Amino acid sequence: MTEEQCDYVFKFIIIGNGNCGKTSLLHHYIHGTQIQNVKQTLGVEFSAKIIQVKQKRIKMQLWDTAGQERYRALTKGYYRGALGALIVFDVTNSDSFEALKEWIKHARDFSKPSIQIIIIGNKIDLEKERVISQQSAIQFCQENDVQYIETSATTGHQVNDAFFQITLKVLDLLQQGGIDGEMIKPKFLTSKKVDENEKQQQCNC
Ligand SMILES: Nc1nc2c(ncn2[C@@H]2O[C@H](COP(=O)(O)OP(=O)(O)OP(=O)(O)O)[C@@H](O)[C@H]2O)c(=O)[nH]1
Ligand SMILES: [Mg+2]
Image (cartoon, rainbow, N blue to C red; front, side, top):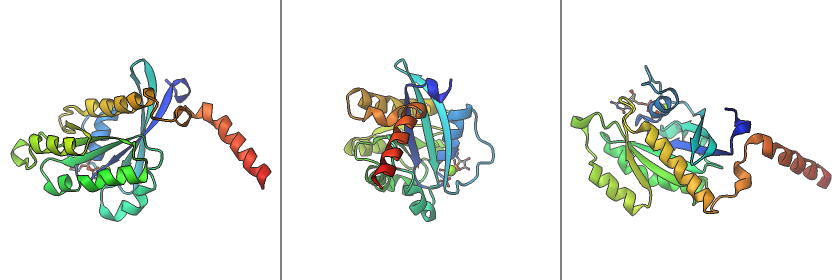
């Protein structure tokens, strides 16, 4: 299926502290396998996947960002237009959990307050090293009005569900009238509009 055959294009950002498994999760989602020798993301990497949800064909644009502090200024530039954020933390790392509040704020400040958010507690295969309980993560997410799911990019546990659920949330918001439908049509539908806008801008000069 090509983008032209899709009903909508949704932009998603994948954010969270470095080393919590963002790239590994995305790789598992796209390829269905565990990534080998994953490298720290430098800046931002783009992937895409087309899925069908509630009889709608959706192209997911997936922007995997570097979690390292030094890339923060660069990655913020990619939040614009995102309809959904997958915010990942590592259940074996309390710093990554404590940083969630700031990541949620970034998502809402640098895209739109209406951005849909799912928090992903990753690396649940490392049971013995776990320091953030499921209960405390659920409580945090309830208090901050965001969804929660636990995954393992190593075993693949609930990886598809995480991406599916955030897409569903965006689609629900769209169907409730909370998103401007014009903004999310496939490129071939909007390119004409862009051309017209460009012409108009030229005329005004
Ligand atoms: N055991 C286990 N290890 C994982 C899991 N997910 C990722 N890892 C490991 O965690 C390390 C970091 O994974 P990445 O996917 O590079 O993390 P990231 O969030 O993309 O990191 P940055 O690109 O630096 O922001 C790698 O060694 C992975 O193999 C998981 O679910 N379980
Ligand atoms: Mg990465």
